[in-house]
Amino acid sequence: MNSPTNTADTANATTDASANLAPPTDLVSPANLVSLVGVHKRFGRQEVLSGIDLRLSAGSITGLLGPSGCGKTTLVNIIVGMSRANQGAVEVLGERPPFRRARRRLGFMPQGEALYLDLTARENLRFFGALYGMSGRELDEAIPQVLALARLEDTGRKTIANFSGGMKRRLSLAIALLHSPQLLVLDEPTVGLDPEHRLELWRAFRTLAHGGSGLLITTHVMDEASSCDEIVMLRDGRIIAQGSPTKLMRQSDASSLEAAFLAFEGAEEVHDDKTPKEQGTNSQSRETSARGGKESSDA
Image (spheres, rainbow, N blue to C red):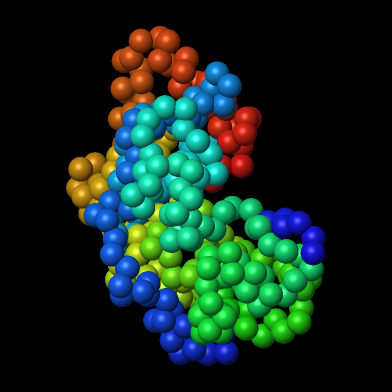
């Protein structure tokens, strides 16, 4: 086995698959699935996250909204335990890093695919399902559902090495959904998908939230962000606004989320202009890091 690199038949079949993705009813969720207080992250001398305070609730969809290089992926990596904060408190599903117990209740879809190229889609799902602690019977029930949702049920014995980029993305999403996680973290999950499939996935996300799961979804697509219960707007590694889409548009006197983001961004720039010179230097270093450093792949 190589190291990882990282069409539904009918619309009704896909809808049925998404309806079966609710988490187990005996799963008791804490009020805050994720809690971050005063989180900072630096790469060398360059700070890419600054003073992040964030709480994610069960039964809701939170959208992390911002341009490429603003720190979204770094923040996601801290939440899923792939990176550690330099400063601040991080708690996920009631546990501090490295989240050894919480990992089995967490579903994660990264920007890059983490798949075994010489295995089929079903074989990949069985492998990762076993890591989640799923039984053979549970896998037999869940695998057809997530394959239908990802439109991959007809791939047969085709190995992942022969999948297109879009097919690999859809399989990564299926793996994240496989064990009906209590917390689902998705980094740009709908990139490269057609509008119809995007709508199908968002219906599935809403089904999961109604069942009690909490979802954190990074995006820079404004119409997707408007489907979230809560939006966190990020700029240069700092949260510039947070609230429901309606609240943010009302606070900024804007008619759209895009206009709201620009308004909050403009207010932040005015604030920066009034801060001491050294703070402006820090802001510039964050932007340089985001564009040219390890955060250059951030979306």
